[in-house]
Image 1 (tube, rainbow, N blue to C red):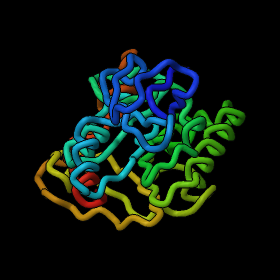
Image 2 (image 1 turned 180 degrees about the horizontal axis):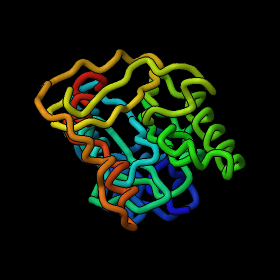
Image 3 (image 1 turned 180 degrees about the vertical axis):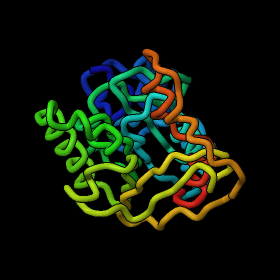
Length: 238
């Protein structure tokens, strides 16, 4: 697993130690900010500026995101946001390539998670009986994220069996509520976060995602968070 984040201990490394910041390949050009003696944290330059100016900054984990869309929306508003996925990030930015379960205890203020829905979404109910083991694993992964030791949590998934296996979602949103003229019902399970308020109700009720042609990257396109929704999350939860 490749990690580009964390509390990194330099006590066993040769260093010129009176610097408050440093750069390192493992941080992809981001700065190390000195938190304690010999311990540094990998943060963005914007976050460093905010901390030095006294601005309130949250450390935000965007779990199961490779696109960077939600991550970048929070970064644009000054937060220290990191995406995490088994895949590399599609665009430049702070990203943890690896198992998100290994970084849940890293002192995050908020997590927005997009757990895989293949074995949970009711749209695939016809295959449930053939993949009971995979479904149980998906349910357990979802519940681990729900119970992560993070103060503010939002879990996103389509209409799924988690409404009965866990509880009903706090909110169901649609793209047309946030400037995108299409339909894709998305459930949000929220902890210490308010429901999203629609920002731009538009015409258009086409099920674009549902009608996508089959192909190797269809699942990627279906999983992306739309920009209007990402911006609403960052504006209203950040």
